[in-house]
Length: 578
Image (cartoon, rainbow, N blue to C red; front, side, top):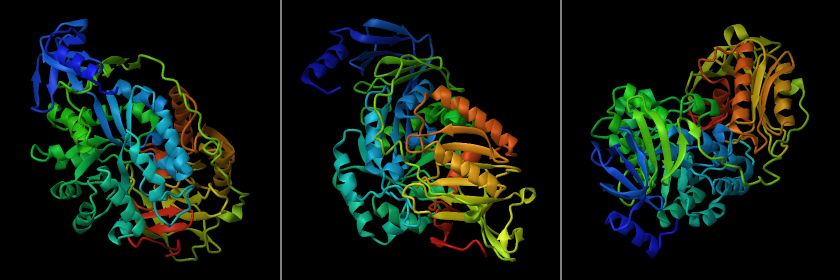
């Protein structure tokens, strides 16, 4: 709502008790995140904003019945595309979990569809009861070592800075470009600085000296910490540390060891990448809060991290607290220690109650035709998947459960006439990344250990960040069948055994998102999980999410792009044969 003289006059009149509020919430235990205390006062709301705290009369009264009232939770860094739903469907899922604001980075769809993808995310999040702010994708493609669907320079991003929901430049993951003063990167950084915008970091594996470089460049956040030492180093340098608990990267428990009364104001909660089924079953930021409290954190401190800290990090001056002049985004909680949410209010209107969204939220934007036709591959044959490793050792990607970091293993793998032979007993599988944007015919091949498939194959068009087709399996037959199935669906996930499709989930929007509702997607994900067990996966971690990050060449240690095996330590391609 645009702030006008009339709006200001009305708010002041309500605050001064000359005019009754539109709504007053009584008998609630208000969580004050400024002073970290509980106060028992009425909350007077008018025009979707809080006009006052104290004793008020209103046209409508809600009795909170002694429940706690927290500010709406804020997810400080999320890729909506990773939930495989549109922004409208995403809002239906996260609002019941108390999340009223998210800071989204659309670099997943931007890597596939460029500015068409950014436009779609902005337009499709316009008329929904979830505030979706955006950080512009800084690295499309993520590196020059792979083929993506698009390339975005600083000139492509300039026009978006005038959008009211664009807060800054998204996660800068190309550290060499920053360190070496790459001209294009410097221009992107300069543009963000000159417009007073925030700049997010992506400092996976960077040491203390390298963090100096990021801070000197004006990069102020990191969501890639995986241990307390990294988190403390970044806080000491002045960074905000994003405490991440996603689906593939579950770092929160480790990072909580670094959080204290003295430094907690430098922390915020994020999900980054979280699958729809995990959002439904676990929750979003409410899950982070719940975990932190269970680990011994003071509940009010956990709420402060989930609200005020995130708002201040991104300069959202009217969000993150329950105070006069702040938006009436509220979470009514009956059990604070277990974060049991009764009601969620967005701008003073009931948005969700007892886990159920109150109103229908239709998708109102049709994706551009190119977004719906983003998967293009040529004919593939079994010999295209052959890996020559000779008779010696091989460079192998070692999976770390529930982490997007991998190990660089050098081990002897099975071979026949010098060509790699998958061995499920040793958990050595074949991995392939197939370019799917411009019919280049580029195919990267490697060996992985730790995925756990005993007979079969899986494939997905969700492969961070360039989102080529990534597939793994025990035979070329199943690899080919899974790859071709994802292509025939114009994007999606597939599980195959003995050449037969066991389960599939079509994702026709850029090969990343479904055009169906969340209940359909949740049902298909359940079928995929059952099929994953059939092919031998133990399910102690999410195989598809793990697979999707095996193609991301900015996360240590060893990854695979469509151009081949990639060593993150040397930032170069290497041979599979050691």
